Image 1 (cartoon, rainbow, N blue to C red):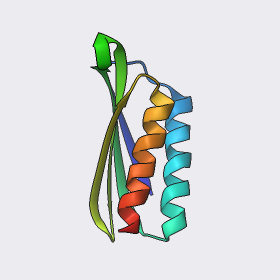
Image 2 (cartoon, rainbow, N blue to C red):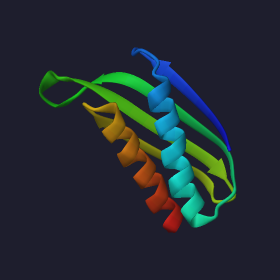
Image 3 (tube, rainbow, N blue to C red):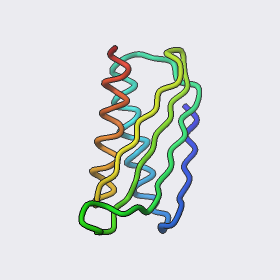
Length: 93
C-alpha cells in the first residue's frame, strides 16, 4: 500500500503519519481489499465557534474503486480515527 501524505498549513508530525498508516492497515486489512494507493491531506481549518481545527482528507484507490473521506476536528488523532473508520464503512458496502 503506497501512502502519500501532504501537510498544508500545519507542522509535519511523524507520529500522526505512523498512526494514519496503522489505522488504514487495520481498516483495510479487515476487509481483505487490494489497495493500490492512498493519499492523505492534513490541513489547518477553522472549526466550530472559530476555534483552530485540523482537516483530514483520505482518498483510497484500489480494487473497490476510489473512496474519499473528509473529517474536521480540533484533535488531529480524532480526525484520523473518524476518517479511517469512514473508509472502513465504505469498504463494507
